[in-house]
Length: 406
Image (cartoon, rainbow, N blue to C red; front, side, top):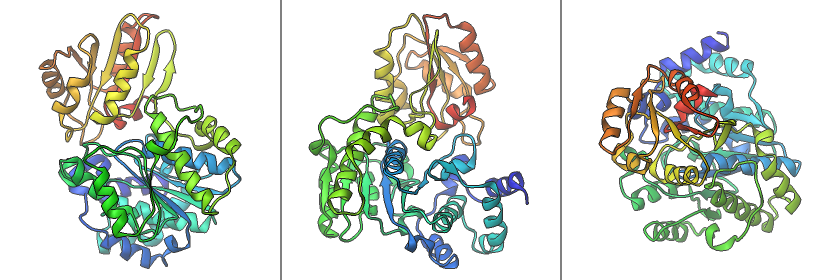
């Protein structure tokens, strides 16, 4: 199979949370252990940093990778989901995995995948671990897919575990209280392995402390320990806390002589994060006059910060291109959006996309008014056509909406 045929097979033959949602979620990591054994346990040859959290785990992972690259390390970076190309998920020093490697891996293991009914995500994790081992990386940043305790990535024993924050998202799988979600995320804390917590609230701190005590893990709360940080190419207001989390993580690893990173490496790593890692869609500016910003924030915790940042911008009229997936709790996110804006409702082009008429009807109950469009690109084009140079266009609501305009 060529690359396109390989991807088509991966996307359509196996459960894929990105497109299908609930039916792709597995309740345990048995299959991942099975696959790792089949591949000769490449994860056991990797030095890893494991990153979980409701929001910010992607940015935190990319910032960590960028700093470590600046320090001269060969860095594997595994993240999800991808925006434009599957290979974004698996990079070494910012370079995506070769198409040929993806094809060869799938072809070589296809019968095993089919026999054991492995999911899309399980396959991808196995591919990442094998590729990083083959590429002889020095250190690897492994981002959790969803949750932590039962996530496929949780077969690793990392140098350090990182949990960015806890918000209400994926509640159908992780529970609908901060405590229950924190419990799932805390599942990545391993015996005698230190853990850094980015942000906490009164409900989640005891959960983290309890788990760390159980595993005899040193625990560090970055928000209490790190003051000012350094400027970054990532300009979203929410990056302030992510940067503190990264600094604390690097401080712990350096103190334990597990890595060697200088203050200069951190400064340049923060500034060069986009060119070093290729990160997309985080308060990303796509145009000026009118200013156009896209952002992948997609739950209340993330959207609240982004929408507040928009209100601090100077503009005449606000245009919002909005689309969501069908498992979002609209009652949580729609009240956060400003009534004084023109809305362009659209549906991301995946099976999980919420129909535009439903979104328009629900939004109207919160005083958010606008038109529906047959595609994200049509909505975006109309927003650009209607906006004057003094206006502001925001594109978001879902990672998959942003992916369609990049």
